[in-house]
Image (cartoon, rainbow, N blue to C red; front, side):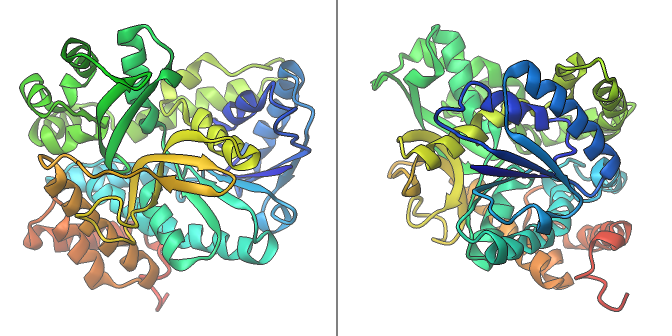
Length: 421
């Protein structure tokens, strides 16, 4: 097996190696090809991974590539985790909306749209290279916004692909903690989109959980939507629901904070890469846990293993709707519970999705589909329509100057929108 990691200079690449450790009999990985345009970070991570691999018993050959075209031939799986524009672009996504009275966040609202506009063309470029160089490979995408990229790939490319997020395992982790059981014993329905989803109908070994245990599990989400609303909905919401259910509070919190999340991450990564660059370092630095986003390798390698071995696995994935949720278009990518095996990834039926939140989910999917088309075409009118459709923007008079400011700040990453340049 050959695995390619695009965006391998990420501080999370070691997580993938750690998850592969001990699985050589079922996942016979011969080569792991690291791809990153930041050659300095790539060199640091590659050197660390050589040391780390020895410590955890991974014997695959590790190669480095500045462009994916030299890495893709012969690939079976392509794991993607890149950030177009880096965290410097993320800070702009946060600061510009905040300066104009809107939530500034990495994947939600206007900042999330800019991440999509920068990233979708790159994702499609990679997909088209895969069509030529490794047409049978699977792309396992972790690059955000994961759901929107998954939809763009499903509509505009012919490769096998899936979008993933660690958020899908959070409900199981919380219920496992509350009930003192293993995550593998837990199942639930899962309705929504990437970073806009709800878990419900929890079972342990096929038996519904008690009301007391459900409420104990939901307690971990009171900060996202306040206790009365969580108790009324009886749904376990994604942590990103805080921006929709507590919009004013979160806006106030972010604007009064000394630094945005992106600014804090920029500072933290300096410490993390200094640790990785130390020749004596052969384990993940403690600061990585402060970076956020942990757990993604568990999901990524879980899906990879099921696709390769053919053993059925229940996973939450971003896949085309295809009638799973009646209120959404068939070609819309949703985040939902699926069965993964050698035949592919099949969403499980959802006949009783929660009517209390379907309006919000449909509104955000409307925004997503407009933004995806804008990213592919470079159409500013569609980009404006997407912002106006978003529940956190809506106001057309304010949306236009917001869009103009965001596009101009991202000019170097948006050739579709600045064709004259």
